[in-house]
Amino acid sequence: MTRPDPAAPVPEPSTAQVSSPASNQFPSPATAPVPGRDYWQDRANEAARSVTTLFGRRLLFLPATHVGAVLWPSPSWYRDLKGALLGPWHYWWQAHYVDCLVDAGRRELGNGGTPAARFNGPDNPSAGRLASRLVSGIRLRNGFTFVNNYYDDMAWLALAAHRLDRLAEEAGKPGRRRNAGLRKSLTLQFDAASTSDMGGGVFWSRKRDFKNTPATAPVALYYARTGQPGKGQALLDWLDATLFDPAQGLYLDGARLNSAGELVVERAVYTYNQGPVLGALLELGGDANLARTAEVVDAVDRILTTPARTGGASDGGRVLRCEGTGDGGLFTGILCRYLALVAKDPRLPPKTRATAARLVTDTAESFWAGKRGLAAGEGSTKQRGRSIFSMHATQPAEATYPPGAVVELSTQLQAWMTLEAAAAVHSGTGADRAGS
Image (cartoon, rainbow, N blue to C red; front, top):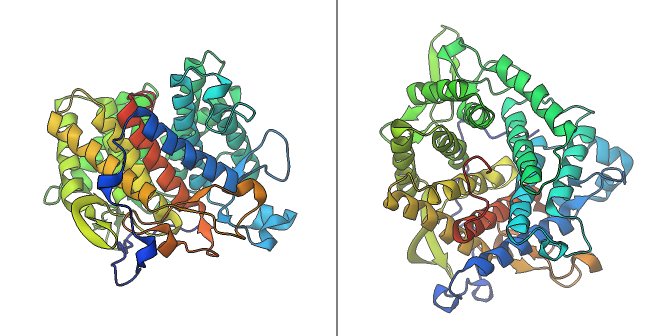
């Protein structure tokens, strides 16, 4: 599994690195329609249809399963039995795929939960049913277990499965016993990884030599959402004491012990690390946590944004920075998911909520403006009319993924997540604290 190097964040490309010919310029924001509920739902549905159509498939043609291919178009070697079982496997990408489907399912439910409300049409599975098939596919592809070598991976799946069961409950359908077993199994993993070593926190991997924000924050959020607020707050307290940088107002990546037994902090700052911290702060609540939420949102706006571009030139606005391909291709989408919760939380100051809403909306607008349709000869007949989204909000897909390029699932999930976050901000669904 490819993991980000904690010491080397991927920079946003400059215009010198990725150029945009005149034909690929973003449309002027002045010509865009005024955003509204249906406007953002339609955009989120297009992203959902595109990702599921281009990347979604059964696992080994097994019924009642679903997984996301890592690449589109898939290399020929990836399509046979050996490739399907031994090819690249990114467990946590699939976990976020589940989360995106739950987002779509919550919108379906908000629209009445009828077959006509389905993102991909009344003759296709609902988003919740497809998400359940994906959870089954993850277990089978992962060797008939949900246990993984990385605690952050498992935390993302546990959060997604919990949201999936909440969706089923709200839809008046019974939750899956499989999902309860998933959470029970993974909770034991989190309990074992949450130790007093280094003063607290959660280990990143089963090597147990590094504790970091990517594992500690989603586990804290999971504990908070599953009736263990004391454990969640203890993890947040460790993050605040060990990895919060007051000079920046952001959370650093992680910490390890050196050969002398001294705590060494990895000072890289990633967009996605701030997201689940925001989620845990909101879920646990209280004056101190809400004040810290406002501080982090302000810092994200100041430090983790980059000038928006139309036609390659800054238009004076700012969008969230993106961090490339691979695992980094998910980072900005994850932050947007939790900024949407901030934007909808009435306990926060209006300025904080407005900042979060603006960051989500403007980043989503940029992803949408930069998408491209499939070119002649790309994809199958069934895939015609679907969209490819850029890996960077400030660059069009024609430049980052020109026709013929291989597209990574992570970057498409990122755009989908961002559009779902914008739909939640503008529609009022999908952004309640316990349900998202």
